[in-house]
Length: 239
Image (cartoon, rainbow, N blue to C red):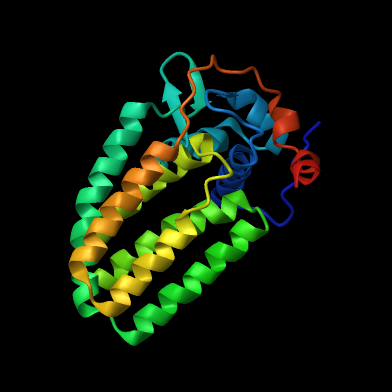
């Protein structure tokens, strides 16, 4: 018997995205830990879809860095390593330092107002302890700055890195780590003042601090009941 209903979801693309969203929500809520197996047959039964749609969803999850697909073994929730995180944040420091230097020299009053409004959304998500939304908004703040920079290639590169960082943060950053909003606020204050050098220094320190705040664990993958983990009732119970 399926436990996840998708009313109004007809096309294969929509069904694929519904699976992707449900898996991501379960990871954000802690119902699917790193290394948990994402069985094709079980997902097809839960969502009442074909294995082809499930495979497409798993490929999308892998593309986003949320899952990994191992030959002859199947798909699993991603287990990023310390080296993976080091690489992601090292690349971000280089790219975002260049971006924010340009933004500090060229941003407008309207840009600053938009960034401050974004920070208010982050603070609200943190206050209501909505981890999924908070992780999304924290990463999107950096993408907002990148879009202000006007370099489309750098913005696209950063988008992929922020997506990789999101899964690392969701899995390994303690819920109590909440300095992000304060540092984002300081960053906007410096942008408003046009202090490019200070912006670069803060951006690098901010990303370095975030990297070291993660708590990486080397536990063996847990055996998880996918039906229970993906059930809407389970999500409500944890809310």
